[in-house]
Image (cartoon, rainbow, N blue to C red):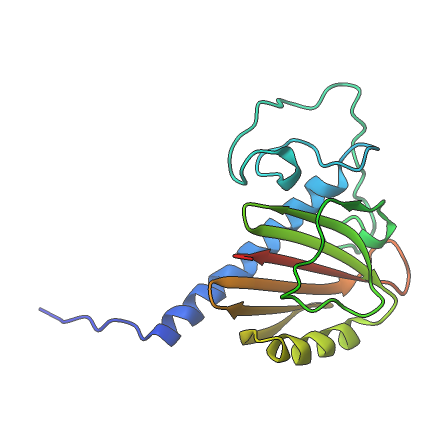
Length: 192
């Protein structure tokens, strides 16, 4: 019988991160879509797992299908990443501020801030380029005590992931699909 050797903690962490990046992008796209499709009151719709629904993430709500009077959000910008409607063009929907443990990008304007059950979704808009924002977080996350900082590129999108004890942060930086020259900065947190 062949004896299996347990994975080293570092190998296990790398395997988990390789699975987390695509899942994080999918979750981020779904959360952003939910946040951006809220009514004119600036609140999110009460869909499944919506941070603004008052229900724990991942639990079903009894909101049911949208009423006939709901106005759908059109996401048809040519060349835009699927699921992103251009954060910088959206009305601010802020019910929570970025946790102090995560460095705030200088001069960025908050357009989205939601938090529930120790997890948060925060969206900022800046006129600085993707590379400048990425360089800032590559330097500032370790300086703020975040460890295991990884940086990856997917097309024009930069994504950094880091850990601090049991807390995790994902910083996604991409060109805004609606406002020329603007950059979306999307930060998801857990364990804070």
